[in-house]
Image (cartoon, rainbow, N blue to C red):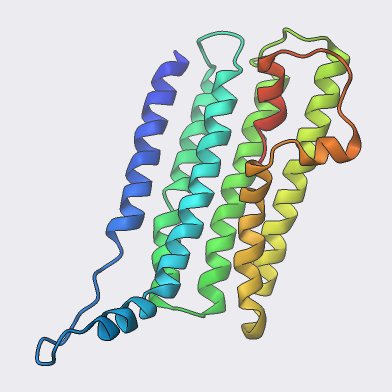
Length: 228
């Protein structure tokens, strides 16, 4: 199957999901029986604080998955993908489409640990599917092979370490969701994968980067599994 068809469908799904996130936010309902002042507007906007926070976190998380998806398909050795990866991509998109629902669940149940845990579980499932996609692509030699085996192994090991750290951070965030006084830590741990994506290669620098000269495609391999 041509990979450009998968990329085209996936990009459209990403756009729809991101759009749903914002259209779910309703404007403040003001009582027109009283004068509308700046202070009243600020009070109503303050009430939207948790809703806007959930929107920003979800937007950042979905954008990070888009970066992974884009990097993943940019390092294919040819312009086609097999049936297994195509089906995994469909499952990936199906799991991703749950994010607006779990985000809306948080909006309607602010401060509820179950709602936040459900959100974390949905993100965790997507991250696991992303890792499976990467593993399958490597085993089937679908990814580019323009570097030597030793360099590829080192780069993949570093990227895999980042991926495991991200999975652990999501699971820790889910755990904090069940402690009412520590729920704010859930949001922090859910956004850690986003931080790893913003600062690519941080683990590689700590562990030491390979000295071999690598191509842009190899760098993409190193960055691809940032969230998975």
